[in-house]
Image (cartoon, one colour):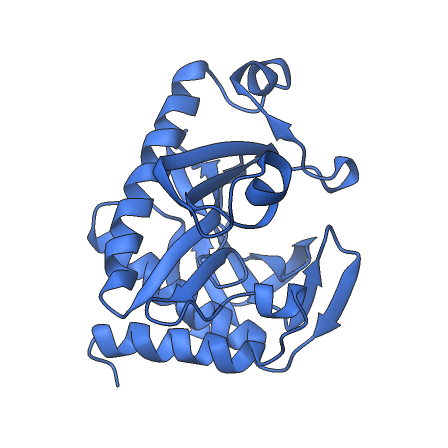
Length: 241
């Protein structure tokens, strides 16, 4: 599949049109950002790792009956996927308190939540991705109807159950993560974007070592080593190493 014109460039990916109007190509970049773009850097190999990890997880979710945009991994940094109308909601799924949840609500760090928390953020960098509720979503016309919001919540929890069980099998805790959804050409809601440690907080099950982008946020270092470890464990479960 040949890239044609650049459709969009974000913090972590470039998205390209192709000669097929129903298919796009995402190019995973080595760039790193945190704190709404205030902290920036690059790390060689990060894009390739994110592409490979996302590919394995999209394939796994597809096998479990989750509709995603994924089609194929073209090469180390490029993924082929279906075109979708992006729903401008970042869906935050939380299992363990950390980050902004602990800071803003004074919930003790590492507290296991009594149930999976699903939050909505407005996907708008200029506004700092603020928290929104269902009424905000309807006022902003972010979805076609309120039933879509309930479906998104249902899918977020289902994906959380599938991936938490998957990662538990390789001794990794899924702390929290961000999902994005879109409408396909038939107006079905599908999972889009990526499923990498850029968007997931992942801790080693035994040591609570951070295996995600918090290594960059917190200045710990060793980010690609951690991402490589996540990929190795995924591939070991899939029988690929």
